Amino acid sequence: MGKTISIFKEALKNIISNKLRSSLTMLGLIIGIMSVILLVGIGNGATTNVTSSVKSLGTGTLTVSINGESDTTIQYEQIDDFKKITNIESVAPYKNVSGTISKDTTTSRNSSVLATVPEYINILNLKLEAGRLLSNIDIENSSKICMIGNSLTDTLFEDSKIKDIVGQSISIEGDKYTVVGVLTKVGSSMGTNIDNTIIIPFTTAKYLKSDMSINNLYVKVSDENNIEATKSLIENYLERNLQISSDYYSVTSQDSMLDTMSDIRTTLSLLLGGIAGISLIVGGIGVMNVMLVSVTERTKEIGIRKSLGAKRRDILVQFLVESLILCILGGTIGVGFGIGVGTILQIFGFSFNITSTVILISFCSSAVIGLVFGIFPAYKAAKLNPIEALRTE
Amino acid sequence: MIELKNVCKSFILGGEEIKALDNVNLSVKKGEFVSVIGPSGSGKSTLMNILGLLDVVDKGEYVLDNVVIKDAKDNTLSEIRNKKIGFIFQNFNLLPKLNALENVQVPLMYRGLKNDESKKIARKYLEKVGLGAREKHLPNQLSGGQQQRVAIARAIAGNPEIILADEPTGALDSKTSNELMELFENLNQEGQTIILITHDINVAKRAKRIVRIADGKLYEGEVV
Ligand SMILES: Nc1ncnc2c1ncn2[C@@H]1O[C@H](COP(=O)(O)OP(=O)(O)OP(=O)(O)O)[C@@H](O)[C@H]1O
Ligand SMILES: [Mg+2]
Image (tube, rainbow over all chains, first blue to last red; front, side):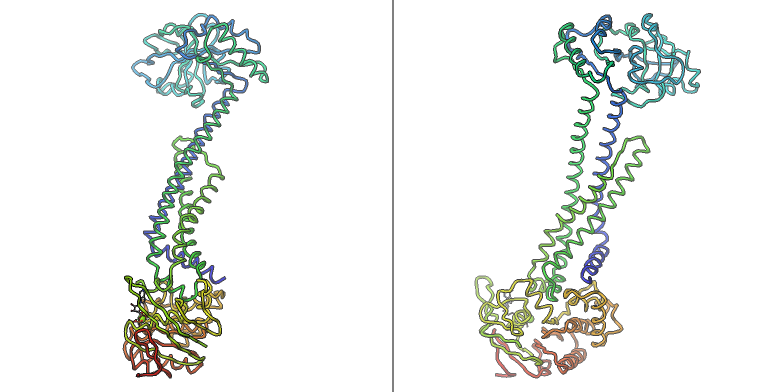
């Protein structure tokens, strides 16, 4: 059809003949679509990360935490009694203790010390790279030994080989601790970055101005199918036996954490999508503005076309096609840039995760914006009075 | 073929009514070459707008090709314009971004013709006005006379019932305007109905029939 061809040809001609204006208009959309892709991609990536670290806990794990403001907590000595609750396979109390970590003259500032028991290693599925694991004897003896996360090998033992690190000692708050094991790299998990953590026996924490009360523990259940019942039993135990008010503790299963995660993920996606959506609308307003200017500039042309027999629809379609091309072109470039920048972020260690659905949606929304913000200027052009339009210069 | 019966058209400007056309009667038959002459502000362009369906009458009746034009919708008017009217304007009114050939194609395109069909026709008419070699030229690469020839080709390409020319020679020198008038005469000899508006008596005299307009009133003949 001759009309369709010429409408597209002329729309392109107009866009190209106003290069600067067209590219500035498109820039608004490019930024809009790019931010949709980036924000949604980063949001997705972050939540996927956390979700996978929740999953790394393995199914059948409960997390118990007791608020520090509670008057009573579990004492280390009470753990054996706690373990008697039906369906509990193992329990891993842990606590973060503060202490300056150094090796000779090197001090590590952003590493943390975690006091825990051998079960912790099992529940979190941590693996050894060299040396040995924490043992029950270390707990009994409150030995001054430690296992170190993988990143610390670089921070504290710059040049040493991993296997040579085992047996050396580091100092925590001035005390000497022998390194018995080095963990493999795991990445950050559940808010703690194991790679930057020094693990010491739970009972050793007493040397570091820490008491033996327990505020956090992981519980592994024997029968996963009864995990909710076990959760209730634990809650009962905390309230009846330990007199901890329900305001001060929480027992969460991995399932409920995943649920929360997916809630957070939805909220985050909506939030980020919303922000990006606003920038898209701003881009759309830019398109509308430029199209309105274009209609004013081309009033004479519209008059000529009408005098030659153009119907309202012909004029409407012509301007609409122009704003559509602008938006779709901007959208495509935006998608390209978004993916490009996202990939670069990925190279620098950010998590970025974009699905084809999101790409399709951003692409379509750029087209929708072209239609929505193009319709008013196009309509304005279509209903111009031909005599008045012809009279303008 | 064209019948204006008691046509009135007035404009309200600053609360005052201006009678641009006052009880105008005009009848033009097929194949006629009529020139309308009158001083500035006498209502010539208003008459042309009504004849060309760009505007509608306040009172009276306009019959074009046995169809009474009244209360027609914008789109219907566009359609009739496209098929029956060929406009020629004083300032040519070519589309600046389209080349000569594409400009002639525009009315054919709105008629729904395919691109190669309309191209063939447009080429034929460009040759007819002597611009076969200039089809790729943009309007600003053509002289005024050449631009007006393109406009004429565009007006006649759709084989309209009638050509309406509003001061077609107004922007041209006398030699060029003479050439253009010859073109109009030739077209008329081939049977084309032409209504030509001018305030130049020498141009008006080239037509077979002269109509005078003054203060919105129409008189037959050259002088009162
Ligand atoms: N849209 C309008 N609004 C108000 N008055 C108008 C309008 N169009 C025309 N007029 C008035 O109607 C009268 C006739 O105008 P018209 O344009 O038909 O004159 P004309 O004969 O074509 O003049 P010229 O030779 O200068 O082109 C003039 O007094 C003009 O001011
Ligand atoms: Mg006039």
